[in-house]
Amino acid sequence: MKIIRRASAEWKGTGKEGVGHVSTKSKALDSVPYNFEMRFGDKVGTNPEELIGAAHASCFSMKLSFVLNEMGYTADHINTSAAITLEEGRVSHILLSTRCVVQGISKDDFAKAAIEAKQNCPISLLFNTEIELEAELITE
Image (cartoon, rainbow, N blue to C red; front, top):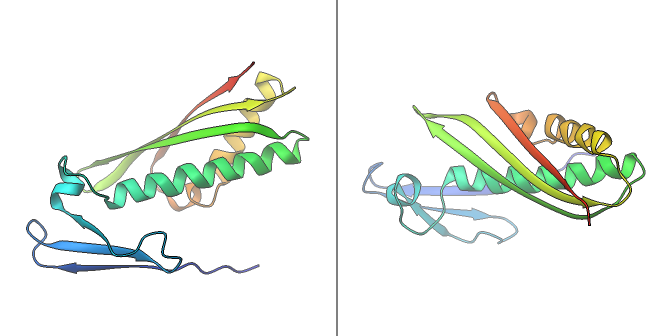
């Protein structure tokens, strides 16, 4: 199966004083502004690294769910965050942190599933950088 998703970005002005807008065909993002202060400062708004983090966290969570299903388990809850480090003009590190509730799975099997999801989620496969994983199995 081949799936094509579309997004676009527009930029006007210089790198530091300009402003851009990012949109997705689905309208989940619809002309959302971004600029230098949103990317490198503390101004509220989005930026490319934040969007990469959201894409990676959501992709990993879904892939982990598929891997667990293949092992015979269903996650009650998967909560994943991604911290994207940008330094010297490149993404130098990604930290995926996930906390999951999965009934009946051993810690070893959960760790194997999390590593497989990290290594094989489509967004992980895009990167040429270190991806670190912190995976916690929550037992109730």
